[in-house]
Figure: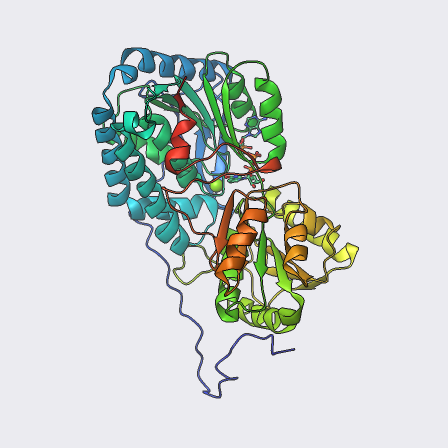
Length: 493
Ligand code: NAP
Ligand code: MG
């Protein structure tokens, strides 16, 4: 087995210290208020209960701000504001006009990208290089893309006359806070709906800053309302009788609860839930490229990614060299201050999520899998977890079945393509998969047989607003992105 320690200057015989000097991103251009209210009907208001909660920086545990907690009364006011804006303004606004607002929002996001990226990293713990290079460009791209559809809906669905649905209730998670808001808002607004949005409890700040951007873009009051709060706020919102459409991204458990709430109501529903993706590497794959794809697949955003490649399926004949290379590569990952531009793996989003990761990793060890973590120093405060790989994993182990939503990879092996497909599909989820091989025909064959909504070939975790994204089975239903993403927000009957 190859050397598993980090490539140090000493091992290169240079006698130099090649450690990276700290390269922290500046934060002085970001203004965080002490207190945030709710955005209802174009005004920032206090919740009826007067209650609030604190959001912390998970890398330091420092409290960043106090945020209003919306209750049932506030939900009712926000839905009423969205209904009034729909009836009086937005349903009468032409597609070309709606497009102008969306283009404006996209451009302001680009102009204020650094501010948003830093705030996203401070509130959620993800490395600045990811919020800067992935979350922000993609969020702007979603608004640009759907702005382009707003005045072309009649061509999007030939022979049909798409009508907006009305008021959309949208509940989003903490792993890509701004990006998920963009995925939800852009198609809804392009299609002519108004919205009540509920960001996640641990990451409300970029959604609230987006609220300011909507004001800056002069979006008419009430077209988008933002309600911060915890699970109860989300539950009250999706259960409100006057919403026409519910869009939810989050855990399968909550998704099922929402489905039960909405059963028989006639309301439209899309669910983007969890995943346990297989990243399948064949013996003819370019091995170094595959290692990069595996690392990106599971350690990107600390593994807090619904489509993460959390199960590595590697062909038996190359398992040993591939795992050796993977471990060497893992040892070069820099874990720590998310604001440092050289950081690869940032902080775990919350104490609760850290506890869940620790519990599942302990179960992997108890069930008999072999754990490897590269040596790395972790900061004394904050929520951290080392990049982890488990070998010797059986399909029945919890770490092979359950979504860990952390930087933890489970490795399984296979001999034939048929066995790879069978193992890849042996999960209640069906969100994404990756295939690494030199053979184009094999990629096409597997794409047909893998039960996953998104399949990447010789790459992983690539996103584009023109491409639909969504799952099968317990990963949910409905698609976001592309033309498919619009259908969730229009009535075609
Ligand atoms: P979660 O607990 O389901 O929360 C998602 C959102 O729903 C949050 O805003 C949450 O509020 C809210 N919520 C909680 N209970 C609710 C209820 N009973 N009714 C309505 N809303 C409720 O999931 P999470 O822990 O934030 O996110 C992790 C999970 O999301 C993972 O399983 C991951 O796979 C999945 N995910 C899926 C996708 C996808 O596109 N398929 C994308 C990202 C994440 P609080 O934050 O206040 O609890
Ligand atoms: Mg936070």
